[in-house]
Amino acid sequence: MASINLINPLSAAPLTRIDAPLPKTGVGFAGAPGAAPTEGFSKLLDNAVGTVEGKQVNAQDMTRKVLMGDSDQLHQSVIAMQEASVAFSMMIEVRNKLVDSYQELMRMQV
Amino acid sequence: MNLIAGIDVSAGALNAQKTRLDIVAQNIANAQTTRTAQGGPYQRQVVSFETELIRRADGQSLQGVRVGGITADRTPGQQVYNPQHPDAGPDGLVTMPNVNLSFEMVDLITASRAYEANLSVVKNARQMAMKALDIGK
Amino acid sequence: MIDPMFQTNNYQLARKLLDVSVLRHEAIATNIANAETPGFRRMDIAPDFATQLKARVAAGDFAATSDTLQPRLAEDQTARAVRPDGNSVEIEHELVAMDRNAVEYDYLTDVVTYNLKQLKMAITGKSL
Image 1: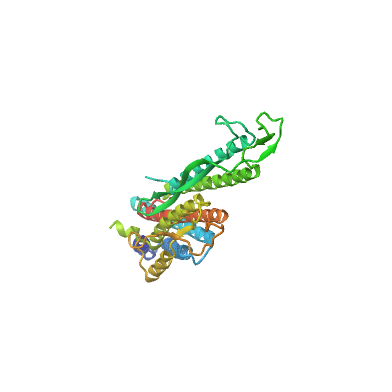
Image 2: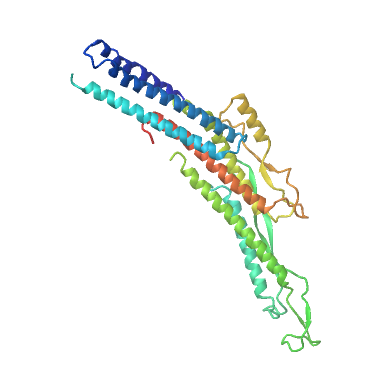
């Protein structure tokens, strides 16, 4: 689905830019701990996108099989669709929270 | 405009079966009637069905059912020897109505089953329409 | 811009199959109504629809709006006469077929709903 690919660029660019200056300050505490959380966030979103994509492809496959009459596993197809839907919802929530926290950060007066 | 699929066909069939049930009830009630307003014993009534073509919106037509007519069954009734009966003839024979209770009961059961089957078709169709209204919600 | 959003393959397929499901229900209604009509042969969806649809899916063509592939009703050639007057309708068989059709219809509306919801979620960014 095209929409997922639109979300992908969001994860990579701004978060690594937040990440980049911190290790150079040399104050001592902003080094490794500073790098890990933001890397964690982008990894989180990447994982979410990957999971969602996988679940959606699985759901589409199962649904296609039932629609064409090759399978009678109706329940599996419905479960797969619901799982994909929940995973998609979760990814959207994660993205929304990330965007909110980014905006919160930007609002901080330094 | 038929929002419920096949409703015309099922409605026609329900009507037809209901009429048939009514006539069967009338036959059973009059199984012993030896004197009618026209004189003579009660004659069994028979419902005949006929096909009516119902057009769908896209041009295909469905074959529905409706009551073609209610006719009297002309087979003569049984003659029973009962000289004390008020309608007995000079030879003591009474002509009973040509209603055979076992036939009528079988007809009753068949008509009831057909009525229930058509009713469940209508219920199903209505459920499908309601489910369609919930698409996207 | 708006139309391509509704081109997802399973969604198109489900829409077409919903048409088939409704038509099949009408065929079953006709069969049950004519359970005692002398000489009546049971009707169902013409089998060439299924073969044509499979061919189209195999070729990757999913257009649901194409009017060239419409389901039609035809006499069921595989049904055998169960009454001496040639009537080939068995009420139990029809009732079972009707139940199965209802389940199929529910499933298809679920597939359509799922696809529409995905689109809505992606567009509004609100998880439903």
